Structures are given as C-alpha cells and as structure tokens.
Length: 126
Image (cartoon, rainbow, N blue to C red; front, top):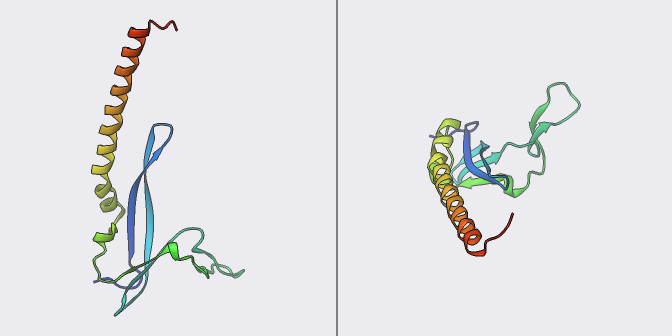
C-alpha cells in the first residue's frame, strides 16, 4: 500500500564520453494518493528548497514543471522503474551496467583488431 510521504528511487546508467560510466539516482516522493492514482514529484533543487526567509522553512516549491511529476494510475510502481530503496534500484540497474561493460569491451577489441589490420596492410610509419 502506497501512502503519502513514501519515497521511491529510480536508477539509470550514465555513460560519459571519457569511457566512464556512473549510476545516477532520482528520488521521487509521493505527494498525493487518491482514487485517480498516485502522484509523485521528483526531489531536485528546482522542486524542493527554502520557501521563505523564515528559519527552517523548507518544502516543495511552487510551479513545479510537469517533467518533475508522475502519475501512477495503478499502484504498480515497479513497472515504472521505481523502487522503495536505493539498493533495490541499484540492483535493478546492475544487469544493464554489465551489458554496457561487455559491449564496450567487445567494441574495444574490435577497434584494436581493425587498427592492427590497417597498420599491417598499409605499413604506416608512426
């Protein structure tokens, strides 16, 4: 049962151009639950912060863009890639991360073979 205040996590693999890959996390908070669905808002610096000059007045900011909101029509959060803990989200992404690693290693060895073929056939001086 999902209730207001629950926190869900979404993870994905971020491939960077310098042959580095990282796993990134998004934090989604349940802001409302009613008969129409479960309403979630992503917690970022654009959606959560200091609301006024009062001491300790932090909360959801106004005018949150639509791309920081989600609606789950049924309470099946796993089909949306959401998980109740960061470790569960991390474990869900690990097969994808291993696949990327295999693909990169395969492409790397393919490129090395092609370079060797090219340098042998052309007798290129370096």
